[in-house]
Length: 97
Image (cartoon, rainbow, N blue to C red; front, side):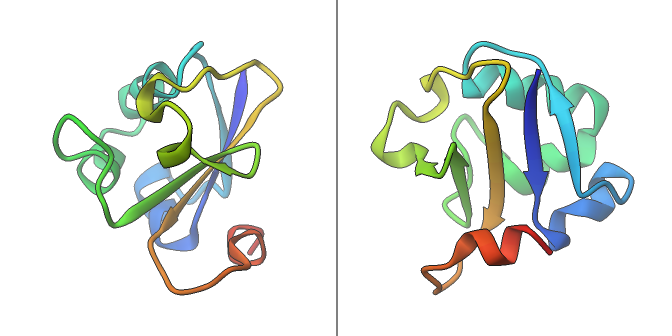
């Protein structure tokens, strides 16, 4: 299962978890698995067909907007980071809080 790291603002919707594991072979499948367990996250992350423009998603430190979006392949040992869009280059520091 992939590891999904959640920004502090998203954690309340995931029972306070800093990170969770989720199954899926694409980012879309991983997010769907996450929403099954934590329905409140869906409205924050993906209120429509696509991920909200106010959320940045990284798979192994690569922005999925420059990959294949929701069709980006995800392996069991991959790390996905979900962050609110903000003006910083060091998103990993924010995500590790």
